[in-house]
Amino acid sequence: MIFAYRTTTLDGTIHEGTIEAEDQDAAVEKLKDKGFIPLTLKAQKEGARGGGEISFSLRSGKIDLITFTTELSALLNAGLPLDRGLHIISDISENGATRQIVQAILKSIREGSSFSDALQKHPKVFPRLYVNMVRAGESGGILQNVLERLGEFMESSKELRDHVTSAMIYPAILMVTGIASIILLFTFVLPRFAGIFTELGGSLPLPTQILLSVTGAIRSIFWFMLVAIVAGIVVIRKTIRSDAGRYHWDRLKLKLLGDLLIKLETARFCRTLGTLITSGVPLLQSLKNARDVMNNRVMAAAIDTVMKDTKEGKGIAQPLAEVHLFPALALSMIKVGEETGQLNTMLIKVAVIYEKSLREAVKRFVSFLEPAMILFMGLVIGFIVVSMLMAIFSITDLPI
Image (cartoon, rainbow, N blue to C red; front, side, top):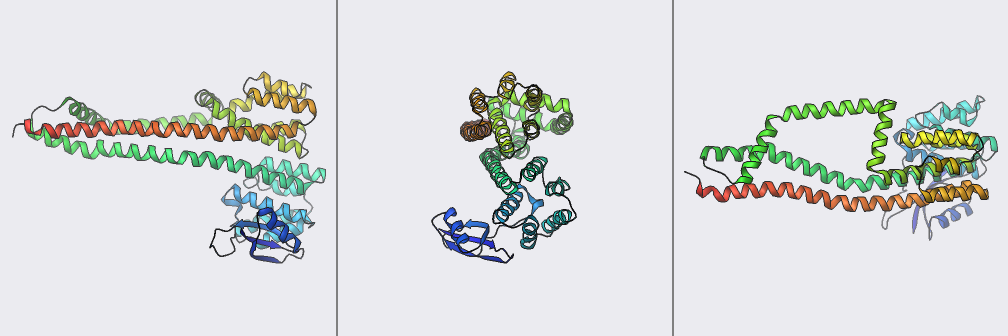
């Protein structure tokens, strides 16, 4: 395989090019043997040319934060001091906003702030979880290791999120096009069709009469329906923004999509908690941060109870079991990890299991949803077409 790379040296010189290796690990080793520090490495498609650079902009999304973390971790592992590593990243950043953020962090560090305090000044770029893990790495003297775990954590989270998003793209497109087709038929085609038969007079087949009656009703209350839908969306959005409304909405989602949501939140909670504990963050602080990354308020509120019991010395496995929300397999593995002193390792294993299970569940859900939507849209559009054809076939019976 051919990989496009961007590397630096201890004196900050940037090198770009391509290298041939069996896999990514082998390419990294070859670059290190040449005295280079790998910053970016990307496999090229056969016949592709160019450096294969990865654009970098902290403002544009979490993937750029992953790139920043990976590059800084590589530089620190190569023995460069933190300020030198940040200076190199600032130099290679092509985006002006990124360069300003990194330079602001570098300035704060040179003025006496810690790295975590410097990151905390940019909450829209660096989330609280990120800052807390960096702070734990600073206090334990293992910042480069923590950054490496952070990169892996964000990469796995992104892969899971991208998998769910990509799986739902086709059903969403199918739904939008189907609804648009039905609206087009009801608002433009059928009214003109009805006008022709009204002028001709005579009786129409029952399906056609039903279709035309539905069309007329929809046209007569169309604006009322539109206003009602918009008002309903506004009310729901306003309600969800309140704490009580969001809690009830999340409870409803648990009832409707319980298995999927529980697997998603379990994987997210366990991976966050395991990564934090491995990085040296205290258990109670880790629980608090893991609770904050959970989107479902019902499950997040359950973690508050777990934190209270953990603070009283009950551990974590028993309090998690008492909230009756987490899967039995996850609880059993967490209990084993707690008893053997390998809680962090077991939490990561739980996350891996449920991320895989979630992907399979999403795949099954989509495989059911797609044919169900196709069948529903087919029945509706088929009824419309058949009704129109029946009316056309009966045109010979109409008085001329």
